[in-house]
Image (cartoon, rainbow, N blue to C red; front, side, top):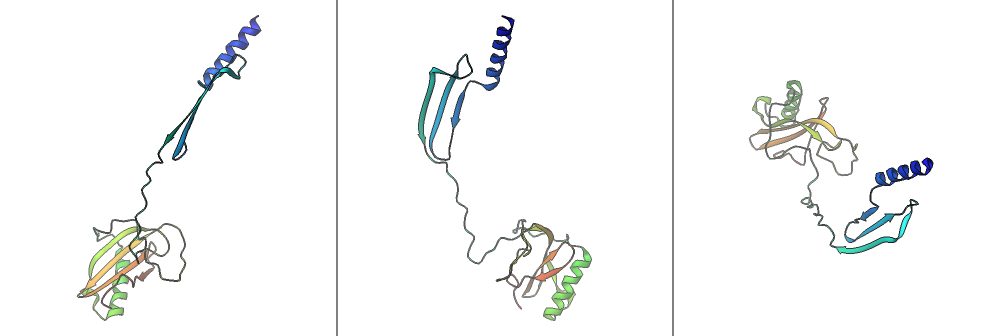
Length: 174
């Protein structure tokens, strides 16, 4: 008698922990199926207490990604509309200005910083991939420097350790 009462209490606790037996499956778009099963005394479904229903629903609106303009490649994870200056270490900026002067023949002092900010690049191309080259696909910290002198504008991409290259596609006046 006590053993039967203990089993009944244990089974009741197990059934309470399992919930009501309601199950709803919601796929992306299409139909939704809902099933409700009453649990019988023996732990299985009660034969006369099972119901099922299906309802149709519209597929959820998934916005399509806007395509990039032709010739555009994903760049750094920064706001490109508001350039920042003053974030590049002085020795790195000096090396970039020396390179700009050597390329153009313009004195280093003539170059104005349009942008000199710390950025996180999406991959090893530093936001300026060259056709036919492959790049490591990791997020890289670095710097973005844009210098201007008269009608010359040079766009440099730097790694965090100071290696740099001119992004020729973004530079003008050469």
